[in-house]
Length: 73
Figure 1: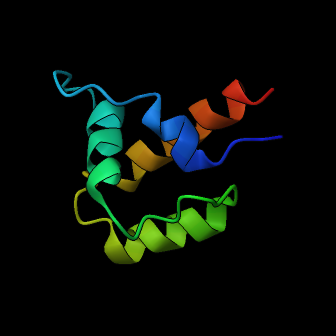
Figure 2 (figure 1 turned 90 degrees about the horizontal axis):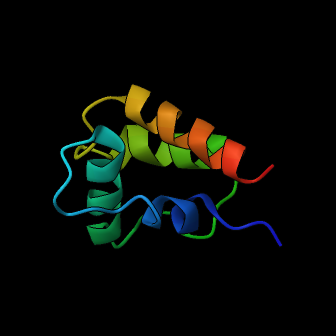
């Protein structure tokens, strides 16, 4: 069974890191409304565009999504 993007993103958490993906993961962890079950790029992207004020840039999401896809091969 394929894991959700959120499940993958949580593997990137690191409170001591200044890496953008790690910071994204740390902030997504604190976001109660994050679409935790989604495996769909458009759903997560749309959510972040409207609610992801903690995300420095959508490029960070794109990088994290690419890493997620690579991990699922």
